[in-house]
Image (cartoon, rainbow, N blue to C red; front, side):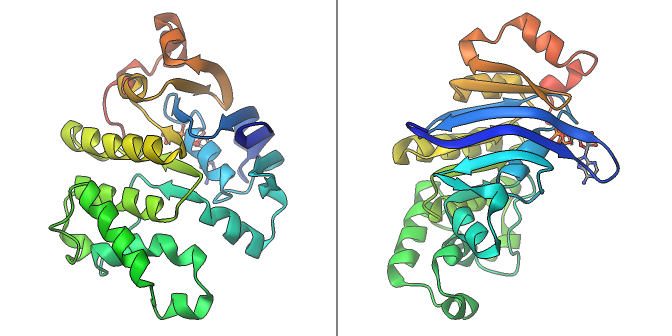
Length: 258
Ligand SMILES: Nc1ncnc2c1ncn2[C@@H]1O[C@H](COP(=O)(O)OP(=O)(O)OP(=O)(O)O)[C@@H](O)[C@H]1O
């Protein structure tokens, strides 16, 4: 695993109803790589991302992360592993009655003892770090607001800061801009990209829009019907491949679906 932080081997996911969502996925991610995962609706992008941190239980295959086997981890091992893996969700998953700052500090929970965690006894340096992250994404005026007072784009910037507060090696972003207008989408993608690059964090980001994927990612992984059909440089992604990928679902390429 030279330089590699994540190695997914022969990953298969079969849902209880019988749907074979992932067929035989092999994927290696190097430190600091920014990878867009594209593909039509139902291709298996979310299933892939969520299998990596076991929000979804993989059916077969192995997932190595920083030399640990995720698929074999018990609860406490998994908690430790997840502390190094930030997640950004389409619907933000914030705690809406809590403040923006508290939401970001939740990213630190994986590093705290359970008693300190229950009573929200965050260290002063964690607070300063969280405030710095919020300032960096332009939310300095929102720090003490309740999360439900924010716009969608602002909520997602809080989601980005929460993931960064974890000090992760890898960020999994599952359609982070699918609910946002183009302007907010650009702000959120810039925030994810810039911080990942600066801190050497690898990122796997699911995106519907091919143009956005090409703009940010150097490496693109394209998924169709549970299989990786392309894995290469953005510049190598041909029009033919894009056409094949979205066959019959062409309208999805540009719209923010869902
Ligand atoms: N909880 C579930 N139970 C059963 N089948 C599921 C479940 N979640 C997803 N699937 C099925 O697995 C396949 C892959 O779904 P997945 O959500 O991973 O695709 P996706 O590429 O992320 O799609 P989208 O872009 O629409 O989010 C689809 O056929 C979907 O219907």
